[in-house]
Amino acid sequence: MTNFSAWDLTDKEDKVLSILLKAQKPVSVRDIYGKLQVTRYYVYEILKRLKDLELVEELNSKPMKFASNVQMLRKKLQKMDADLNTYWHSLQNAPREEIFSHLGLNETEQAILNTLADAKEQPLTIIEIKDHINQSKSLVERYLKTLRSRKFVKRTRGNSQSYLYTNLPFNKIMEIYVKQEQGEWAQKRMRLEAQVEQFGGTEKPRDFLDLTLRELQNRLNRQSWMNILREIPTSIKTPRETPTQGLIKREKTYAAIDDGHVIF
Picture 1 (cartoon, rainbow, N blue to C red):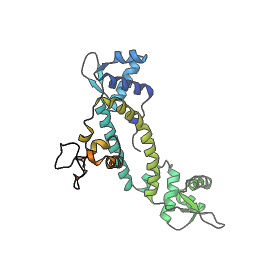
Picture 2 (picture 1 turned 180 degrees about the vertical axis):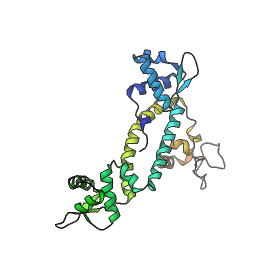
Picture 3 (picture 1 turned 120 degrees about the vertical axis):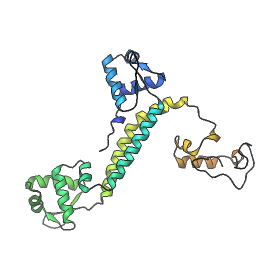
Picture 4 (picture 1 turned 45 degrees about the horizontal axis):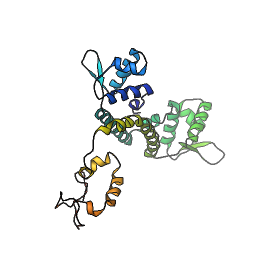
């Protein structure tokens, strides 16, 4: 499972980070614990954790000072996004034992699923499963009930209690897991995003007409900006031939929208 500790900031950690971002300069431990009304040691432990998470940096100075900025937070967000993306792709080729373990299944549940999966379309009774994994009948029955409730196995019709692996594609199991993980990731990500949004406002944007599509995408997704750009009156769009004339009449040929050009 990927490590989401970077999103798990406590309220105090969030406040310390806010103090550093608001200061926009190196801050001493004394300055911080005076504002939070907590012990010096407690503040130092918070700063140490934030440093380990690459959200603040410790300066080589006396007294000891720490600093942070929006660029560090953005870099951390990008790194975590990249790590998560890499992790998702690694699941594509993961063996089923790894997929099962990611789903929180214990060793006995995994052994049952592997036994049924190996049997393919051949139903197995509780006794056959019990003998194969060398566990008690009562234990197998209990875990089969759990696995059946999660729709990982199904019971065949008839008098004999035989079971089949549901043969869900592994990418489907992975998809269920990824959706859960993505929800957790997105929820915990909000603290850092809120800090970036609050303290990133000091970066004055250039004239809207000078922004590239990539820069606009940092504020809204690509499709939203494409829709906005289509609504801009033609009279204020600048054609490629006369990039500095401002208000003009409609022309048939305009510059293409790509990562380097936004305005037609």
